Amino acid sequence: MAEAKPKVTLIGKLLAKPGLEFIYEGELKECESCKVRKACNNLQSGRKYRIVTVRTTAPHNCQVHASGSCAVEVVESPVVALVTADSAIMNSRISYECSCRQVECKSYELCCPEGVIDGERYMVGEILGNAPDICEKGRSLKLVELRPV
Image 1 (cartoon, rainbow, N blue to C red):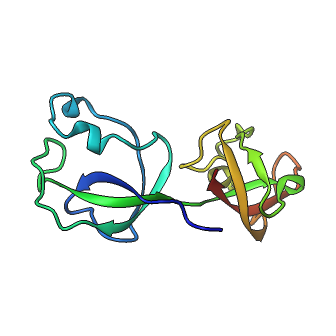
Image 2 (cartoon, one colour):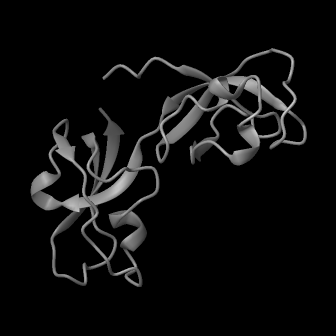
């Protein structure tokens, strides 16, 4: 499957390194008066991104990042998650729902991973294997790579 076309955004100059993965959390209050705010805040909140290229442009002044911000190209990153065994079909599209509320469970972070938005559609990429721990609810789970659709 071809990788998605990169999107240009701004990130703190000290963070701008190819391969860095981050979850975009949305616009901050300090951004309200910034002249380049639309370029910084053009990603979808809650999604996981990976920097593929750092552009060689002059850094922009930034109230959030002390060293300023610079332009980078990002793509949405796949997220490793647990899904029910019957949903773990390579290249299938699923609507992801975090139905687990047992935050003390060892697998909770894989059942409800950061970077996945409840109700959004994802494509099941690689099947990575069985769940590392037994589900406390008794569900049969598989570890997969979810890719944004």
